[in-house]
Length: 342
Length: 261
Image 1: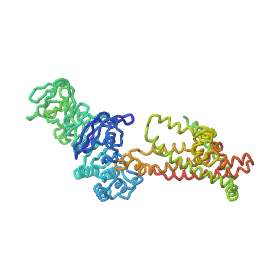
Image 2: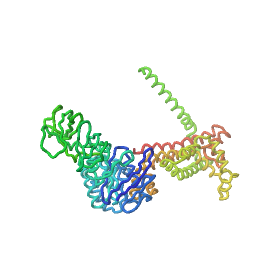
Image 3: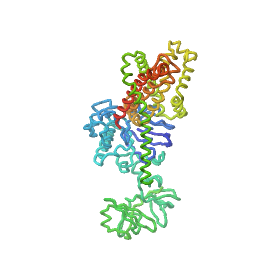
Image 4: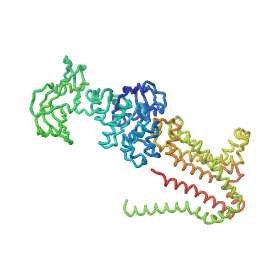
């Protein structure tokens, strides 16, 4: 388990302020946040290599706030790997290992055994990250802290490395906290998502909940929600609320407090069609296409609905099937449960 | 800038650089040319010169070892930690570089001389500072240790502290991480710092001559021969000292050329 309570750290001109969250024993936490949010500083504070100004850190069943880093049973992998350049790959992997056979097995699993005698300076960025992962895991830590450990890997090796980390996570009952910029990675790996910005925690929760129900418009925007509307909320009862913005009324599930608020709708929740179809969706609007942006297999279509721009994400194939062009009349449909009020 | 004025500026810069190069190298080259051969051959017969050179090498080496022993943790502390008074401590440690060296010798005499409490206490342990090799070591240490500190501090500052952080999470206590990671990563820089300190210690004259005229180090011997017997007698000693200065210089260049970036 990783439990952080009221953690504050000052690092140069930057500060982590009152950070609290918990990742259950054997869980996989994911820290998401923009550059400069304090993600690496947070990992360092948990690892014990950053002095705390306030707060407590618990790892497993122990309060380790005053425990030196070398006694915390924590593995730390930086994005830049920080392999020891005066040692070979093999010596790096074995650096903190207590069981050479296990260290060799971990090296094999990450495919770095073939690099054993190579000097660190001869490795690519991706290879360095794999060696750094093997080095941290070879010690069999109880807690693994990963700072964007897959960022330099090509897609194939990234998938393999993720798979191995996930497998070792299960086999060794590791508790992992990983920093990532990649939202899909967060959803793929994490049991808990911790959203950090400006040294403060913005939201903690299951990744799918954080993505679908962002706590604030800022979180929604940061997580890539393209439809964020400011307006007023009216409770209708029976767990349904109405949200009004610029002449547009949306229906949302949940008993949000009446008054000023925001509605968040992910673009992939919006279905476009060229005529009105019978469906269970509560939100159905006629609109006109104002912009079409195609990026590979995905197309983003902006529809003007009574003066309010609404973004829909659909496959490029679907967009072609609908013969969409700028100026086309379309029907935008989405369920009430797709609208999150905050 | 027009093409013509650019050419004029280039010629002027090349001229200034060449003049400075000649100014710095010509006197030493002239000295070695005039007395080098005689100096090297006199090593076999001039016992006083041999003894002075040996004393110079031994005291400079002792001062360098002491400087490295005390300077390494101090340089590490200054490179890795910011604390109240950090800038003041750093400035105070640079001070010996800025004061005239005879003044440094006087300051040392006032602190370590026989009449002082420290000097008196050291005498009680049989350690005489003024007028002894210990005094030479003290003078060398005082004027050259700041160079070691500065170079060592720069070396540690260049090593990313995250290497040590990783070593700590891999089970190393701070000292062990320093020994297993920081020292191997910084050893070239620290050796270079030692060489610079040793070379500076060998060339010291002003502070030594105040604190310990006898026994004579090579710089004091060359000065004495110049003032007592004239240029001809001083030349071989001075030339050998100049040649001796080449040793650390070559070592330093070799070390830097071998540095893997």
